[in-house]
Picture 1 (cartoon, rainbow, N blue to C red):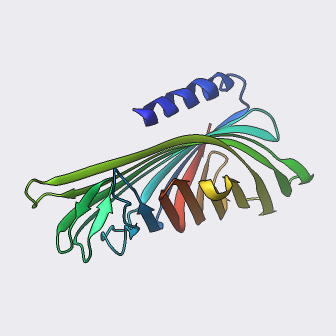
Picture 2 (cartoon, one colour):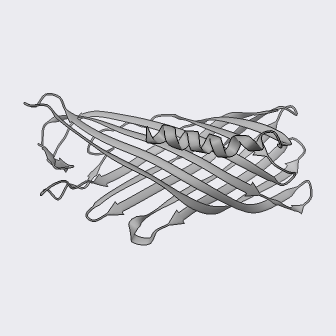
Picture 3 (tube, rainbow, N blue to C red):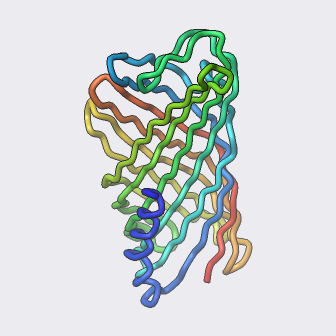
Length: 253
């Protein structure tokens, strides 16, 4: 529900600019990241156990869809709406007792785990033509919204165990975008944005890649992306890091 509200709000803000847009681009990407995730969730009198979703719970890497809608509001600026969804699953016999959200999952118990992420971005990008037709550099101002949900289930225990913890937050970020065109049909791009809250956590999203413009209306893209978010409250914390290559295509209207 919170993810749907974030999507609806972003569309409400972005769509009025379509009528004034000079160009619209739709990016579809297939991201193949390696996942690294750790957490410690206290509950009630139990302090919680720090655990690794990959090493302790057997969560597998999964390719992720990444969609972006860009509305160009001028020759050097655009609004961009981006959405990424990640759903990771694990099924393993745990080797040690894990306390999660007030519940003990004993060692040698079969635990089925789920880690779900909805990541929504709405941003404005303005790039100054440092070298007209060749190099553009400028700031990225973005609002990022996250809904992360972690679930641990032990279906074979009596009674069956199940605990879910959800984390949702929206925050601003700032960054930099660079585009360089060494050839009329080839564009190189790099972008980084993020925010730090000190000991409470941080978020960073960075990528670099190449775009090959096959026609005026169609291009193929490829590159590498890193995304990391960490949040901490009292004795609980969660950290998720995704990094890996991506491929995709761009349609222009």
